[in-house]
Image (cartoon, rainbow, N blue to C red):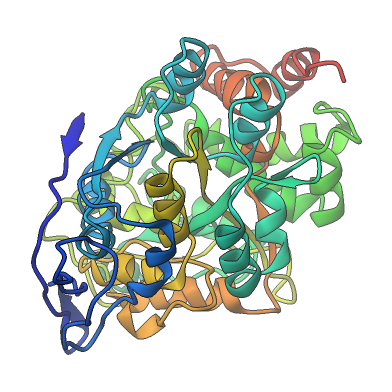
Amino acid sequence: MTIRMASKRRAAALVATGASLALILSACADTDDGGGGGGEETAGPYQIDCAPYEEFGDLDGTTVTVYTTIVDPEGETQQASYEPFEECTGVEVEYEASREMEAQLPVRVQAGNPPDIAILPQPGLLQTLVRQYDAVLPAPEQVEANVDEGWAPEWKEYGTVDGTFYAAPLGSNVKSYVWYSPSMFEEAGYEIPETWDDMMALTQEIADSGAIPWCAGVESGDATGWPGTDFIEDVVLRSAGPEVYDQWYTHEIPFNDPQIVEAWDQAGEILKNPDYVNGGLGGVDSIATAPWTDAGYPILEGSCWMHRAANFYQTQWPEGTEVAPDGDVYAFYLPAETTDERPTLVAGEFIGAFTDRPEVQAFQTYLSSADWANAKAAATPAGGWVSANNGLDQELLATDFDRLSAEILADPATVARFDASDLMPSEVGAGTFWAGITEWFASDLSSQEVTDDIEASWPED
C-alpha cells in the first residue's frame, strides 16, 4: 500500500473531551514569504513548536519518502501525526507501508533505491543495514540531542551500532500482556492470575470445563512467525531470567542452550498442547497459518479465553470492540514465576535515514522529538500506541490501557528487556527464528530440533 500525503496549509487545534480525544492537529501559520519555516503559532490546546526546523532552511515544496511496516489502521494515525511538521515546513511526506518491508528494504538498498527514511522495527535489521550494506547514515546532531534529552540511555543504545548512533527510537511497545473477556471471566468466576503457576492452573481449569483456553496465530506475510517468537522471549525472560536472556540474544550462550530449550518446552506446555489450543481456529498446526491480526477474535465469540499479544493488539480488534476493564476485552500482565518479579518484554521502532538532504534531517528531528510523540498520541483517538519518550504527555493518550502501558514503561521497578529477535542478527531474528517457530507448529518439530537448527544458522563473527 502506498499513500501520498499532500502538504496542507491549514492550522487546527486539538480538542479534548473527557477520556476521548478528537483530533484536529495543531501547526504553525505561514510566514509572509510563503516559506514553511516558522511564523506565529496558532492558538489551541496543543501545538508544536516550528522553531527547531527553521535552521534547515526553506523546505517548502520538498518531499521526504518513508518506508515502514506500519499499515492501516495504525498507518492512518501515523500519517496524521506528520501533519504538524508538514504544515510547519511545507514538506510533503510520502508514506509507503508494507508488511514485507523487512525483507524488501535490503533488496531496495542493494538496488540503489532506498527510501529517504525507513522506520525500522528491529535493531537487528539496523545492524544488518549498517554492517553489511553501509547504508544508514549517522543521526544528525539535532536528533541525538533530542534522544539524549527524552529517552533512557538503553533506548539510544538500541539505535547504536559499533559505537555510532544511527537511529532514534520512535514508538514503544509493552508486549507482556494476555487478552481476555472480562465478562466471561466474571461469569465463570475466574480470577486474574498473579503467577505463572496460577495461569497454568486457570488454563487447566478452563480445559477441564470442556473449553479451549488459548488462541494464537503467527501468520504475517513475509514476517510470519514473529508473534510466536514474542511468546518464547517472554518465557525465557521469566524462566531463565534477565541475565540469561541477555546472554542469549548476544550469543554469549548458544541459541540451543539447555535453559533456552527448557523455555521453549515451557511455552509448548500451552502452545503445543491440543487441549489448550487453538480455540476457534483449529489444532496446534493451525497456529502457523492463523493470521496474527485475527488470532484473538475467538475471544469475542466465546470460543477462546486467552490470547497473548502486545499492547498494540488493541488496534486489531474489530471496529466497535470496547477495550476496558468492564468492556468486551481487556488485558492482564503476563505473570512471572512470583509476584515479586515483573519482567517485561518491550519493543519499538527506530528511524533510519539513507539520505541527508535538509528536509530529511528536519523530519528525523521531528520524529525524535517530544512534539512528535504528543502529536502521535493526539492522532490516535482509538488508542493502541505509547512511547517511552519522557516528554510524552500521558493525558494525551486515548485510553486507560495506553496510560497503563506508559506507566509500565516509565516505572523504574519494571525489569524491561527489548524483543530478543529484534536484537539478534536479522538473518536469525527475522529469519531462522521466525521460520523455526512456524515449523515448530506446522511440522510438530521438537524444541531441541528447532533450536539446534537456529543455532546452526547463527552467522560467524
